[in-house]
Length: 277
Image (cartoon, rainbow, N blue to C red):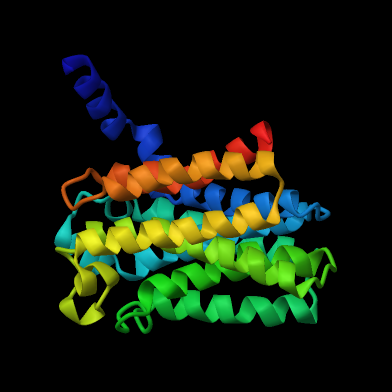
């Protein structure tokens, strides 16, 4: 037991791991792989420039959100990675911004822009705290943005306009992201103002987790109704893992439980489906 605890402490203090996770490279990789997963599952021609765009734009969005909230974050905990590495975070935003604009030029079209504009507006207003603090909206804004980027645009880029299939993929992604985002609101129960009215604030942590498990189940059922048995079994195994992570989430868990394990589950899901189905 002592050896396991020592390894966990070592993991928490590992500088490379902290950089990968807290610089938002980890979640950016997850977003990119979730997009790739949709391309792969639906036999769509993979647009590598779009995948790179998703990685870079996610890096910009998530890092910029933290930089905009730097003062409030520092007041809560001055040892947070972004507070102690402001210059590095700013450089990552600039690299991500330049890179995403460059990669966008390879697949830009009126239709793509029409779909990207709403997600961009949501991301910007969320960063500027215009939407993040609107009651009831936080978790659904995140899920819808992911649903458009990962569940809709791969079809648009592949010129496949099977609207039923697009809606199903959108629902699978939004349901899954809704489920695994709930633990983050549980983590923030002591930090979020009551006016935000997040699901854990409204329902309590236990009922919010149950809601997440139900939504995760819906995502799994839609997956089974759409894809092959081997792909669905991989997704089911992945869902069992995410269900366990949701069930055991609480305010006392280390931040790495959320930012490394739960965010990392997106990466694990892709690997399970890509290599074992």
